[in-house]
Length: 180
Image (cartoon, rainbow, N blue to C red; front, side):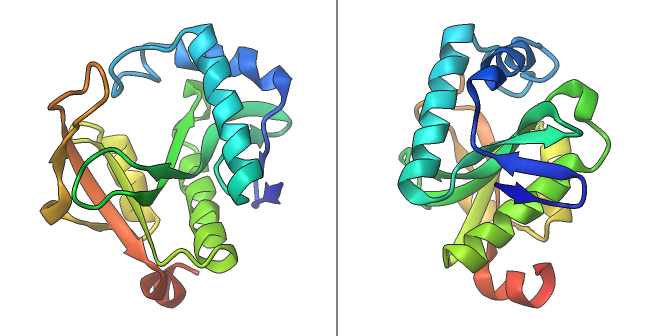
């Protein structure tokens, strides 16, 4: 478990599945994804996220704000077939009530710190559809730099095949100088 000024980032609990499923059924939350998620897809996501944390010591952590489930952030292994994978990706998804408060930025910065300082990851990436300006803004705020040379059309997600994605990254030296 990790704490920031306003957030708790922790392993998932069974009680998180229902609010996570509600969040992922919200078309506004999922507007930059191929579709909303079903409750069974959400349950499988939570199981995989928890297993990754147990296996690697990092992963996609559940986020709490004042004891309330707010979404997730963390580090995942991206392994689909593009030029820069496999890689470690920082990502986030928040319930709409948690938008606009800086929680994604706060949590993503802590995820970067964990990756660089506790797991000695040399470089961390983030990517999204080219229309997802809210997530791109978070990438900029956490010190990541645009990598136009790595932009790609998504190769293997149903509903995203060929969907243009933009890429950002930050390396450990840059984090040590500016981010930490």
